[in-house]
Length: 207
Image (cartoon, rainbow, N blue to C red; front, side, top):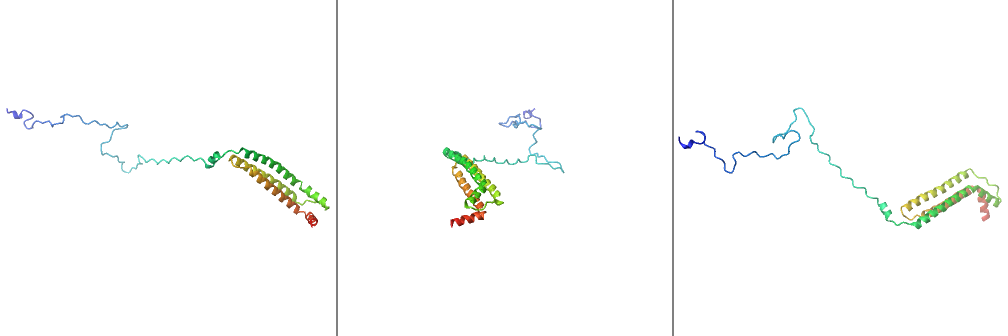
């Protein structure tokens, strides 16, 4: 028998190995991580919902988080207040003036309350008929007393605020004292202007 048909079948030539390739090399190893549920779908496969059914987005886009609000800056007023020096002398003078203001309010209210007696004393000195207070005098006295108290309260609150802010505050009780004195003079003048007999007598005496 000839040697040319020794390998393979009489009709098939023997396979020759390809240079550089192992005849029985194993398939490449899948390096992908093992899925948690089910298996990987074949390459190129996509899922489509059945006809007539709708589905929501399986992976909705998450809302963009709001930028963090910056911390509220410290108020400039508090920074300025801490930077200002303390004023112990101004504080002592302010408190002393407020105490004197309390005495001034008490004196002004006493003067207003004694206004009818004071006008009667002027009538006696000028030889005029006895003084009869008009119906407006009690309301005038009450209003003047309230004004004196309010002026002091406003001065005290403002002075405390200025002292806490470390600003000069002694001037506020002084200004309140001047305003209170002007208010007392105005109310006294209004009460005297309601007594024509006294005004006429005083005018005649001066002329």
